[in-house]
Image 1 (cartoon, rainbow, N blue to C red):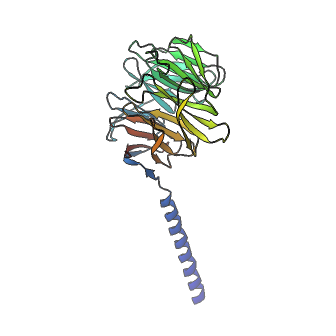
Image 2 (tube, rainbow, N blue to C red):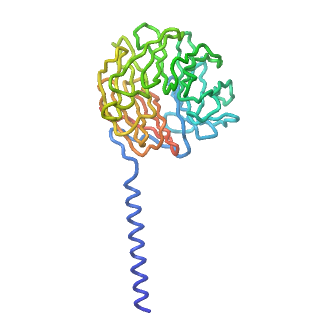
Image 3 (cartoon, rainbow, N blue to C red):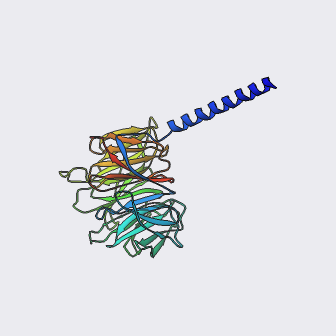
Length: 336
């Protein structure tokens, strides 16, 4: 009986040691940030994030509703989404702030919702939505909505009432869309990544310039004016190096030349440029989020364990926003 008691005691001790070791491993897997510091975090099923740079309001999607969050991470208010599907969020000004919800490939439509939760209009998903952005393409003081479709539906540009302004089906599989003056014409153009290259459309869709990216298969594009003295916006693209198959991010001009080229261990699936700093946020499919100095192509910060993140920026200096699917996180960029 004594030997049995000793054996049971030994077994129990081993179990406790195993449990303790498990907890040590779990603790070591907590998110690690370099060059970033956590400002605040909200638990919940947050899947999309967008911000109003003028008011500082942050909007995010905890699945079946929208929450408005302030810069301190306090939830100001929430409203339900009825008869609206979508896990991703964008903000447009028509000219009043309006939220746009959709899911990549998964939603039936893109839905426009006012900030009181009322659905204003919907536009069909057709062959599946890949990407959406909102910007003042025609410079009339009200944003347009640019929709990039999977398959053969191409790119569509809508007005603030959800009416089609123009479309182009010259290319299919329009994975990403952006707006900016990349041609130096003094007016915006619509920029897309489609069929592994970059295409630039005039504001009315009638003119198109194809930009070949040397040695790269491109599936992501963003646009930003990086320095006050720049005469054009810079295209920031991501994809794969055709020779090495490495994941690359490139600062690109419309003549195909690049000012820098950066390799990352993971494939980029989401990106946003800060309006108040030349900072590019990149979310990769392995759960890491990077902040890159878009002028020099240098990594300023990185945080891991962010899941299938959606990223955004708000405030001055910019606060990095990350919706992970299990939390909404905000980070200060501490690197100089």
